[in-house]
Length: 209
Image (cartoon, rainbow, N blue to C red; front, top):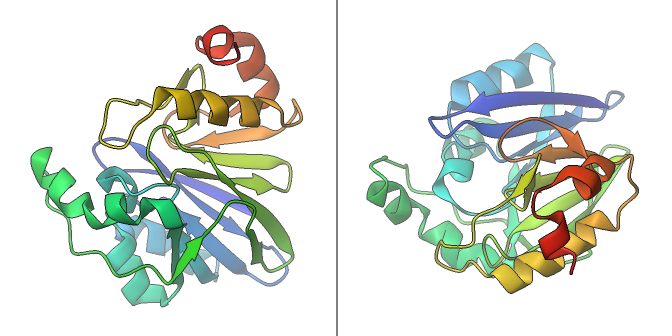
């Protein structure tokens, strides 16, 4: 398995390119900005991108979706409950002082429990609302890509439209039930593990009550 992390945009989003070594089939998760840099990695590694996956629809995580879709013709996947947020990304970006190209319509609206295959790699969709209504994580192959649900030492904000602290608590508990050696690849900041977050996350005691 090939994993490339590219930190993109002014809000420093972790964009992950995950590929099956044998088939070179790949998915790009949270392409928030700088499509040229993302495409450089794809071309350098001779990857065939099958999916562009947005863990949620906030503008800093979707800014390069349009360009990548044009370059790769990959299918755009979001959770079915995130369509409103995804469609409002351009307006949200403008509110924060950024310009965003119009986004393509999603090709697939996934549900909790859906399986995503990338070559021989398999990932399961976890619906982890709280930061946003249709926030999701991708779990498989010993890792979980958490978007803005879980960070090293922290969790996602709930004060944006559609945020819900009670739902975030449930999502946090679900992630903490994963094996402790599971690698956590978050939407911002450094990589961590489930075990480390159970011990050290400042929200662990509060959100596990």
